[in-house]
Length: 70
Image 1: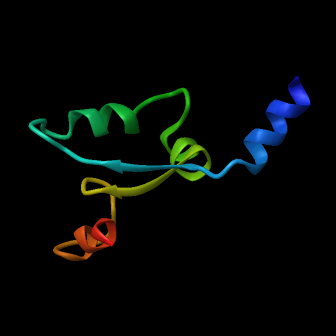
Image 2: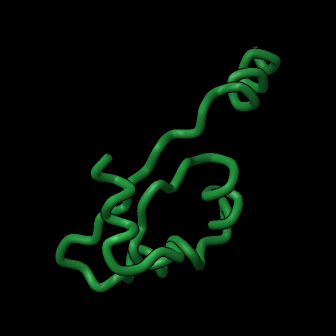
C-alpha cells in the first residue's frame, strides 16, 4: 500500500485552487501563510496549484482576473 501512495503522490497532478476572498479581511490567508504543518511554501509548491489568490500573487489590476476567466 505504501508504494501505491508514494506513486500517487509523485505522479498525481496538483489540485488546482482558486482562493476567492468573500467578506473576510485576508486573515484566512495570513493564517495559512503562518502555518507550520504543512509550511505554506510546501503546500503551494508541492501539494496544490494555486491559480489565483489576490493577496499573495504578483500580478495586479486586471491581469490576475483574466487568468481565471479563461
